[in-house]
Length: 439
Image 1: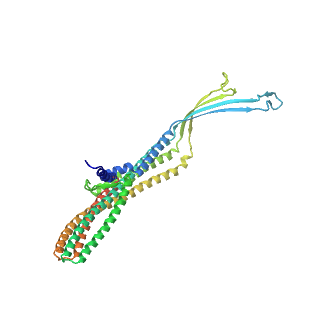
Image 2: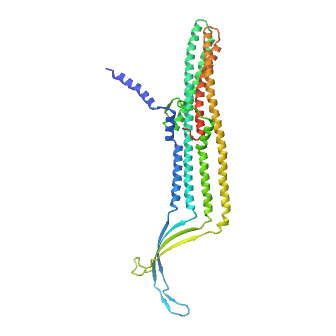
């Protein structure tokens, strides 16, 4: 049976491991995007703007409903002079000392025809809600790209750290070998010191990389809505990337998907309804209504029979601001100029989008070519490192040559990992410029 003290030590040793496991989360890039979108405060704000636009649309719809109002009035009069003599010495009237009256009204009004202004207002507000949704889509793309960018930054640091760790292991082996050679009198003490200096320099690099890793990991935790002490374990984000298409295909995708272009199309439609609304000001309006009146001069809240009036009136109103026929023309001209400006803006933006697509496409091609060049350089650096290692063992090459060859090899390995990450990020940057980063 295990003694109690040993059992306690085992439990104590397991607690830190359990706590560490709780603060570590492994995510691939798609899981990170999904988690970040679910917890993004920016997207919640965008959804709130959509809700506001929908609420404004409901308000505009309410404006098409009939209007109704009712009122009830009570009047009390004190009459100090109760005798009233008609001018010219006529007869006199005896008035009461006081009088009460109740008057009530109720009215219902409905606009039958207003030149189509209510219809245009409703359609314009619908389009503004579409603009808000496009804004939300754009925000989603921006948040997704921010997550991808940070994820790749963490991946680059992790890959660099892996190569540096391998470099330190190799240097440690070189130090042991140099110390044996020194003891055998094959090399000088300076050779050992040079390897130790290289180890110190690489260790400083390792410390910088670890500091950057912690900073980037913290930023990613914030983006994903994770506890700020969570250590994110990442996988190779380049796995599953699709092969690139042609430049023209990406340009076509951008013309169809870019939210800014869609927004200008919607704004152009809004400008068209604005022109129709202004033109509608020159048309007559027609309204119908019903009014109910209640007149009770008896002084009693509930009047005696036949001592109150309750007429009902029905009517229709036609109004026309004739002056708008000549005073409205310049307003229409201004609205048409504004619509024309939107068309020009779209043409300019389309050119900028094409330029952006081409730049990102060429950047991706360069990134892919860099990988091929670096793979070749690694093969060459590996062969050179083996050659210098053999020469150093045979005391043909100097320690400087040996260290330089090893440094070149590990720098080439780091450059290759960074180039692979840059190529993956360049691919997502290209997709982002099409307006749809997840395709």
